[in-house]
Amino acid sequence: MPTSPSIPPSLQSLLEEKKLTPVSNLQALSGGDMAAVYRLETRQGTVVVKHDAATRLQGEADGLQALKAAQTPLVIPDVLGQAGEWLVMEALNPSGRSDGAALGEGLRALHAHHGEQHGWHQDNACGHTPQPNAPLADGRDFQRKRRLLPLSAACHERGLLDQPLRRRIEAIAEALETWLPDTAPRLVHGDLWSGNVLYTPSGPALIDPAVYYHLPEVDLAMLTLFGAPGEAFFEAYWNGHAPADWPRREALFQLYPLLNHLLLFGGAYRRGVERCVAKLSG
Image 1 (cartoon, rainbow, N blue to C red):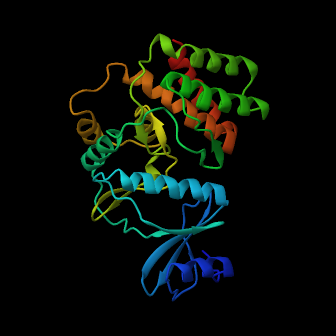
Image 2 (image 1 turned 90 degrees about the horizontal axis):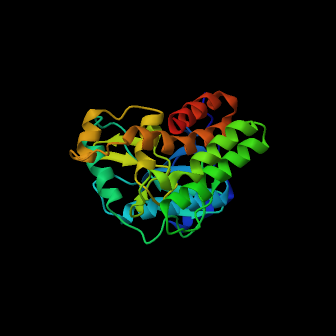
């Protein structure tokens, strides 16, 4: 059963600074694979509290604020405060009806926000994996140097990728300019698997971002990797203008999260990496 730890002094100081008065202990929530996540009742309302490394929480808070500032129809929880290894956020009510069309429309509005370069003003993390975001002008270059090559090297160093498979990934990365057009960098959530989408009474909500500016297929491919957003989602998102080479783009932008899962969770994800590599090498 979930434990109900008392509130430590460092969190208590943050709550006092933000004028939040607890009326309960921390209540552990499920789903915190990468960080401890709690529900906390206060006199001012219910909040969500996260406990993790300070740099990862700072990146998450920065991402939530960026998504909020985009002013889309998507619901984004307010960041109430962060201090060290504690982050306090608005609690959402995940009791809404699943609505793929609303999610597609909201994500299309998010991706309408352009950046000057691919990347972000600071590094962040995807799960526990550091995510380098130093900006680059070309999206193919960014995908190669900031995503595929660093992750394939890290997996190889841990014995999770043999040299032949690593070389095939490197060849895919080096050949991106031969087929993938470079389009304007768009604001992306960056870790948009189905568990980071909540359906509230006010509409679809996004949590746990790892934001940066890049090609929007980053988010679409994550949604299809570990779930099925449905036909209504794609109809709303593409509005009749789906890219003809979507299956190839999907495989490309699933390769990075699969490499990340291989790095974090081990060999069970190698087969998924191999499938993507086969699709991209054909």
